[in-house]
Image (cartoon, rainbow, N blue to C red; front, side, top):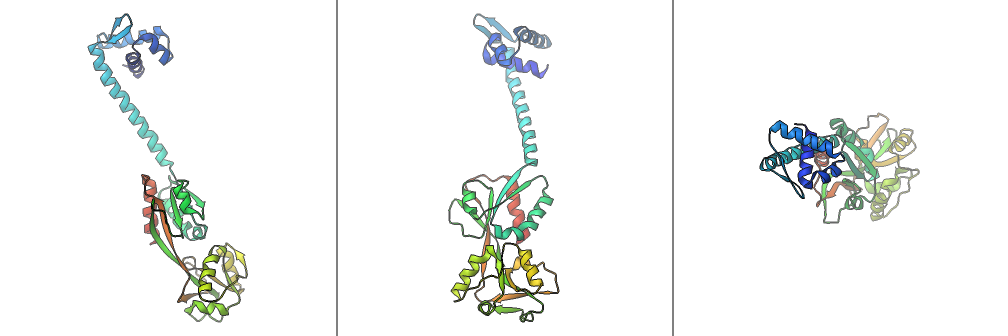
Length: 288
């Protein structure tokens, strides 16, 4: 028996006549009749009784119909599993990430890709991470802001804290730490645009203001300026820990230090794909 013959037989059973079945299948009636005869000859049984209004399935035909439907269902399941496996191997996870954290997180994104090369990470710069997750425009969010909506799950990823990067010949180079308030005595402070509002807020609470001598979102530019003795930079400690440069010094800040918590955010009401769950678990293990 060929699969095509089984498909023809099942369609005739559904339609109740050869005439309607041939229209559904897009074949001629002689072709349809010939294939059913072949099927009946193979089993040496009659599958249909001819009646005035069409055909009726015989008892033997009912057995074949039952088993035939089971076969077609199994084939459909196999087809779906194969397609699902192909789609899974090309699965995409969309990540909405606050821009200030991208530079620090980039190596961890790369590590995840190396471990799961068939999962595509689509990284999107987003200040409004919470809204993007709520609107399902991204699968997972990484944000520095508190999450207020109760339909979201927020898990703490890590804490960022500011430190001062200076040249080895800077007057403070021999200090391991200084009070944050002492920054008001410095005239050549630099910081990233992404951190400006946070630094302004902490400075205001301490009764002074800082104005950066350069406006840039590039950490590497700020490091280069410090390396050439053009000022001191306030930068997240996470971006400074990997620095290996004898011309630079890292000075910790004491007291009221600018810091913020980074969280992973995702919808509570949506069944999470296994790939997204893997990403969350891997990020937690990498960063913490």
